[in-house]
Image (cartoon, rainbow, N blue to C red):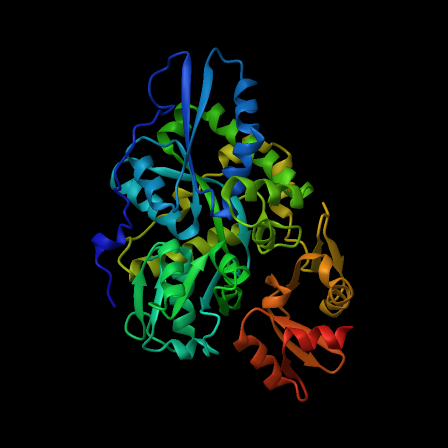
Length: 445
């Protein structure tokens, strides 16, 4: 189905609310307005967690430049209204996903209010932050089962990009092969529960949340695309030029929040859960020590390259025209903010995948060398487990152990996020078979 340009704007011109801006005047009191998405937990180092830690305010207080600074934190469900506020000069700094970032760039240029990508929050080099899910009782086993079915997504989001690319690889026309419903994540989640849509393609943290709640199961792991996806920080160009020290203060604070999250993953997950109402177990799935997301403010070349590839998807959906990614990406501020530390951050790689158990009442998780070892531990401590996580045997995407598709191959027990990848493994390995979680626990014990 085709999407009209008006719809494609994704509510970019939603009603604006009055707010301060650092652009206004040069008075002694300066208000810096930050737009963030509290429940898009891949942005917490520039939003929810950063706000709770107070690092930005501390950095501003240390400027001693004759100004008194106030931070106005504004929470939104998606990136689209943040872009609307930025192009209206109402938000100075915002965070959002890669596809919304491109729309942010396009709209800023179109309206004469250019924006710049100044840092990254979290990323996954294979695309595991986006997942297609179906209802728990669905008998769908592969993307081919979606032909002619209703699929909910948020057009213009990274999750929509995953859906389009996944369908294309499966030989399904993303416009004509399915009935696409353009819905906000919460609406799509409700539609899936009500049975008014057959599948849902969404971004962090919706797939993990619905799976954890028993309201959905994974059909397609976005990491199968093996294309990077990320969230980042965008700033108005005029703000960056007028208040470079303020932007650098934000980026220093973001780096501090990143280091805090990496050093205290369980505590950070608990903090974000408290602020958002999301279960801490779901936050940890994405933001944990071996979570789906890796947090690093450096703008890595792989991510810029992926952003350039994303433009064609948005153009095909008539959401944008050409976007000059190279002029949109501006790493001068984060380089200055982090100094000699920037090169080291740029060179860092995601931590190796691992199986983890979060025992009840514990402030730390326990890691295991193999999924089978984790299952043996879980089997022996059934009443003492808060959450158990295992990496997909093919993509490395972390998933809840009790929600994974398990395969027994001799003495090995292998977890998969989605049934299609599990079946592909079984087909390629004689004697391997899909087993239930209970059977996997019994085999491991």
